[in-house]
Every structure is written in structure tokens, then in C-alpha cells.
Image 1: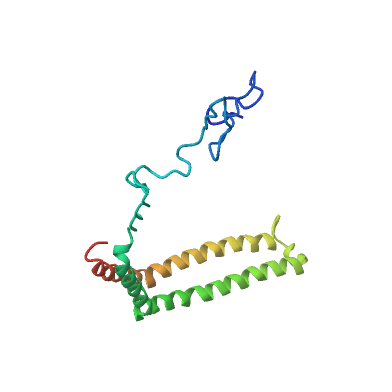
Image 2: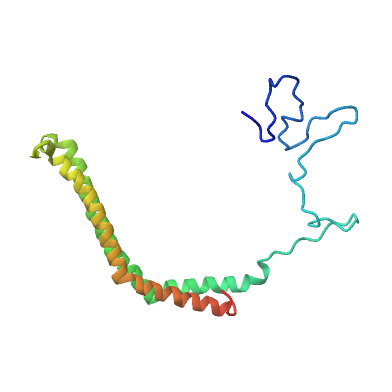
Length: 186
């Protein structure tokens, strides 16, 4: 395997320099009488001009946070989202979601558990032939896939017909409210 600097690692026909295998983090092995260090100049180094003093020994001033000027609008935006969450329109969207999902999940889990329990407790029933080499277990297993696709289609249809329009209106209302807080900037 070759290191990233394209020099062979070990056994390359001569003594390998200790610098060639240095990963650049931490102090490098010293070489020669002058004890030159080979460190990665970008590791743990400040960018030029950031945090450095102007030639004096005084500590550098802290870099201001970019978020300080938007602290009040962020708090107000959080209040907007809480207000939307408490609104009757949002609660209705959530109620419609739960009205479909809870019964659908219950029906699917009962159907799946019935398949698994029947397969383990009544192997004779599951081995009964239906048509040729196809038995009850194969039909029930394929029925699991079919019901998965059926529930997916029903969920997408329910969302499209009963929730998407109301959710989109809530999203637009929320964006308008937060845009008003930020002064027209989104």
C-alpha cells in the first residue's frame, strides 16, 4: 500500500526516512544537527489575521458571533412555530393523520402477527397446496407484500386528498409570519 505522498512504505530498497512516515500531527522526528522540525502547518493553526494581535503581546479580541444580531428574531420565530402548533388548523391536520395511521398500523400488525403465528403453530395448514406447487404460506407471504403496497397507496391518497392542502396552507402562513418577523428577509 502506498502512502498519500506516493513514496513506498518500508522495504523500498534503502533506509526509510523517519520524516516519510510522519503523519503530520504532533512533533515530527528531528533530523541532523540543526534539529529541523517537520510539522503540518495547517494542523491546529489559526488562519492568518484571526485571533492574532497586531504585533503586541495583548490578547486578541474575540471574533463576534454572526448570530448575535438575530437573537431576537429567532426567539420570535420559535414563538410563531409554537403558535402554529397550537392552532386549530394544525391540530386538525394532526387529527386527520392519526385517524388514518393508527388503524392502518393496527390492521397491518395484526395481519403480520397472524401470518407469523400461523406459520409457526400450524405448519400443516401453511403447507396445504392451493394450486400446484403454490401453498397457503406462499399466498400469505405474497399477500404481505401486496398489503404493504396497498397501504402505501392508501396513505399517499389519504394525504393528498385530506391533509396536503391544509398542511401547505399552514406552511405558507408560517413562512409569512416568520418573514414578517425578519423584516421581509427569508
